Image (cartoon, rainbow, N blue to C red; front, side, top):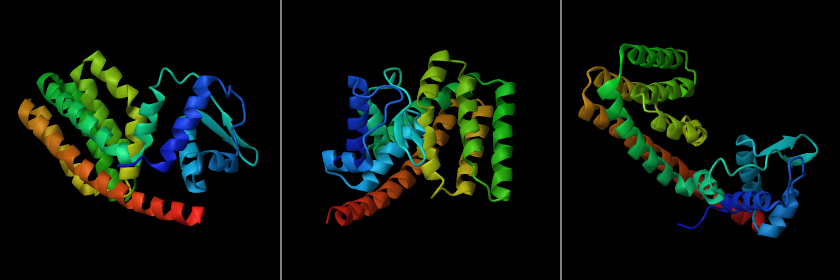
Length: 239
């Protein structure tokens, strides 16, 4: 697949920050200048800048412009990795990583989880159930459930790795809310919880694998739709 247009903008801005072209407090080039420099459309520029604002690398000042909020991005990940994770066409790789990581985390949790871990999972399930009943977003309950599983492993390295990608996962999950079936998600979570509580390692892995495969299918369909829409916008803007 070719690179998503907005990721070209993302890489350019991050590389300019790394080179020292922009320092904290400096105003970024205008949207028009970025469009002309990179030969891209306005929607791609805005998408990239909004993503970097969400990551707190940039800061918007209404009516003034976009400014650099921080230049120390080395502690995050390499700029090309950041760009890839923000690239909808690379979202498959993020989902594959989740599959590899969280399936094994779930198996470990089933092996060593304690009563206090079950309580945390039960609370997140109850939160999700209430949200569904009130027709509210389930994102917070979803995050709490997965974090409870990670905590249940009592493996500090796993906890740190998961924490390091939390922002990216949150971004992906926020998008998933647009097409996810809350009741299906709740049922998957219940199945996972029951397997962990029964200390059934292989079943817990299987339940998490089925859950994330379902998520991956939905996520890819969503981005295929957005890809078609973006290509149409780019054609319109560059005409």
